[in-house]
Image (tube, rainbow, N blue to C red; front, side, top):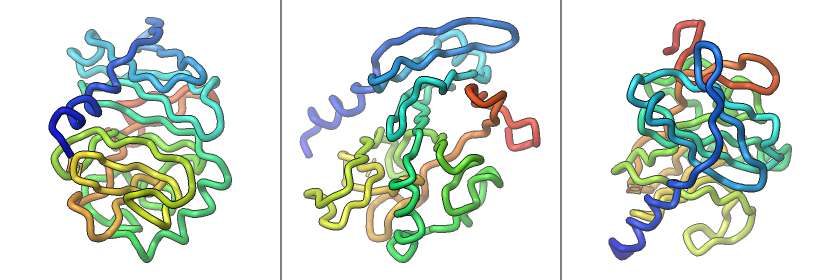
Length: 198
Ligand code: FES
């Protein structure tokens, strides 16, 4: 893969959207139909948690945010996407997230607090590229038995729809799940877990 295409891939997340400041934290409203990364220099500089509005994220859609200068992926997974997860276990390096330094709520089959909502730091655990979200099920050039997930164009690492790394790729670990919690049914706060995972 040429360096130029890698750099383009890494820059792709630099798109803008809206941010609403309120109360103790930052509230970011997702724009439907557009995959965006919403960095807040102010929040990042302070390392503050961010609160994101997930009410407009459609089924199957991923929206990107920014927290501590890292891309955060929030995906509203479909029942079809979830159904493939247990069937991928034999192909994965760490299907049960036994590696240390992961929140307890990612040590389940879907790696999340609520099965449909995946929250992760969108950075490949090999050398730090930003993987692409490849939600379509079907043969891909990089995997003839692709069931949806994340593909890193830098050195071809693959992750499933729970960001669990496949065996036999350069990336050594599952993508990281950040500390987060649900403020209510339509808001997630990322960067702090009241139960102690922050
Ligand atoms: S950085 Fe992702 S595979 Fe190397």
